[in-house]
Amino acid sequence: MSTPYGLQITENCLICKLRHSGFFCDLPKPSLEQLEKIKYASAYPQGAVLFVEGQAPRGIYILCSGRIKLTTTSRDGKTLILRIAQAGEVLGLHGTVSGKPYELTAETLQPSQLDFIKRDDFLKFLQSHADACLNAAQHLSQNCQTAYEMIRSLGLSHSVSEKLARLLLEWASDGEQTKDGIRIKIALTHEEIAQLIGTSRETVTRVLGEFRDKDMAQLRGSTLLIRNKAALQKLIGA
Image (cartoon, rainbow, N blue to C red; front, side):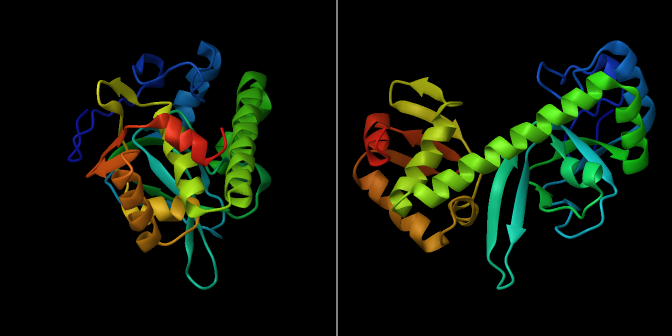
């Protein structure tokens, strides 16, 4: 089924071609059949808010395609992006399992397909399917590991240049090697990059300019080209 957002929506998990190893929905057939009965498939445009920080948990969202930014906001209005969720991830899992309010705000970065499962239905599903329960525990563990890595990066980096270099090198692992360097599609604004490393948009723009002038990395539109990976690694002491 097609949608106004240009997505091909797959409503049946059993025949979904988006499912891959490591996805939450990569479950044995009996569990997947039960999951199919309790989930609701939907498409969202760019900029749609799924849930907000402090909201009572309604349930989980399984990201089938697209990307979601997960943010937290301080009392003075400063926003920090904790991570960018990719296809296969579960959103709102901690709040849904614990019963505590969602700890983050989830907003689509591009048109996305998600499956929603109500909290009560999901908890009953976990109680009766040990494989799904283990899968949920593994996703919670991955989320904790990501949070630890971010805290380490923000807390131990001595400068914005080092923080930004760490981020670019992290993205480089999924980039395409070309004759000019490593090419990466990121589709993030300078403001969003700043929110990822806990600084201002102006500072990110300045440091990216320095990286460009030193022929280390260059961002044009949504395309990042890392020309000198070794120089970036030197900045972080790698």
